[in-house]
Length: 182
Ligand SMILES: CC(C)(COP(=O)(O)OP(=O)(O)OC[C@H]1O[C@@H](n2cnc3c(N)ncnc32)[C@H](O)[C@@H]1OP(=O)(O)O)[C@@H](O)C(=O)NCCC(=O)NCCS
Figure (cartoon, rainbow, N blue to C red):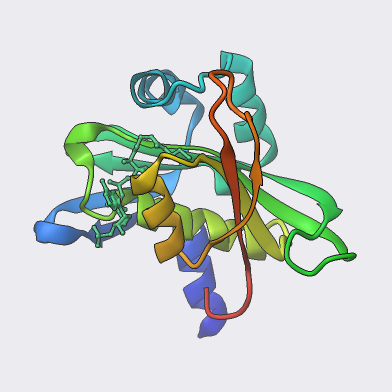
């Protein structure tokens, strides 16, 4: 029974009723989604990547590259990868870490739970498909919406990286363990 639940949450399309009874779907990204994912990235974030970078992540970590579909259109994405290295939480322990590379939701689709549900799905894939035992990301210290979102998902500020961004802004490194109960 439990295995069935995990499979349902890790693969394919899920229909979610968000805030205000807004219905959206989340699923793994497909190559056909890529142009829209890149458009969203350019529309909502100053950190823009070349097209091959998105394709590399889709090829290597497809189960943790998630999109949201609202009224037939892709309106948000989460792109992730897995790295092997020192734990950010349990010092001195080498392990697999999920790294959330980029998250974006179009302005007209915000505050209904899309980013929250995409990230939860990515966390589950990072843990159960790719064997990560923690997840981390960088976020601008001024990005209060994103910081609130990550706190709601159980992430905490671990450290500050001075002048991490190209315009000189600092980044918080936020992380959480990927324990049971995801
Ligand atoms: C940050 C972002 C991804 C949030 O997407 P979203 O789909 O609107 O987020 P959700 O609806 O899932 O929000 C979940 C929780 O996050 C927090 N949150 C999201 N947007 C918020 C805002 N504008 N102000 C305060 N808290 C916010 C809240 O705790 C919210 O829960 P609540 O609605 O019950 O209060 C979206 O605003 C965005 O794309 N921003 C521009 C790109 C960006 O900053 N990406 C992150 C870079 S690190």
